Length: 491
Image (cartoon, rainbow, N blue to C red):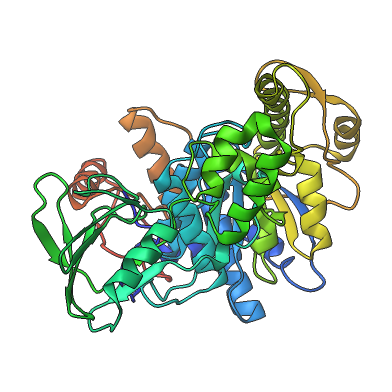
């Protein structure tokens, strides 16, 4: 499992393929598109390019906004599914560095479902928001977040306002802190106290030792106190509880997005008096006891909700990958969420109307999100593998689109209007599917044209094997550990 916020890390992990970002960004059509970043450029731009260009464009946009406009904003890359999010995150990390690129996962549950999202999902989300709004905080990597990759489900869902301001429980060796205060802070951050830590979101206390399993870490952390002084922090194995490596700091974000603060408990108490049909859940919340699915009541228990795009720093950008699929997915999510809300809460109210208005937590439409972001000064770009000419785009803007379920629906996003369009001069390489002869033939022809050819492998052994195969076919190749910005033509 990758760390959203590596505990105690202070140096950026190397990006072995960083030079590829520079090389791809020099391609004339890509460079022309990147020139649209910033004042006087396009706030809304539709690009046509193969899916393989997504991580390169995201990395290039991050570097362009860095160098051209001062402090690093964030590039929010939006994908249709969680699987695509993982793929784009992994690829972009190889170009920018593991600490600069994070994924923002979606809940496994619907906003109105009477089930709580997993603690590790919540922890990863809160860690991303905290790093994005408060970069360089003690206990986290000092490298700022430059690219956030999120499935459309995360972008459409409103969340409790102020999540980025929820302070994690942070401890480092040498800190002077009262142990009882640490226990209280962990409990307030929705960590569950147990006799022996086994799962993320749990903590245990034995004498002067506090075991904590942050939802963003691979292993739990054992904090040893000497009086009120933090003496040592070590990770340990869940299987046998044996200590592993020493860690520089503990950084434990909350495990729930709805914390039972005094304000929330008071509101729950008030609602319980007005809505006796929900007293079973609300009474427990009023007493300070977490309840499964309590997040579904968030709109009624907190002051306000906000969107992920509301938390993007100034001069940030949104890059939507494959907007056609994203639109269809967004429509399906909105429709499903509304149907579930009506069915579940009508049943909860004994067949009547929903007892409490929870519409503020419902998924927003993609068009609404886009308009909201543009009004806030956030550029909204998209990249599709298929382009449309002006006439076809006009027809698409007024015609229906077929969703993943086969339903024909009207698009809620105008693909024309003030949106600029640009086709990038990049094509996808054929999928050779084990046809070595065809692959070597194409590589040899590219080399003869004086082009650079970069073959990327996950390890040293496969790279050496590729060199041998190409050499056997009279194609000169060499294996390198790090790609140079000015690499000569060849393989």
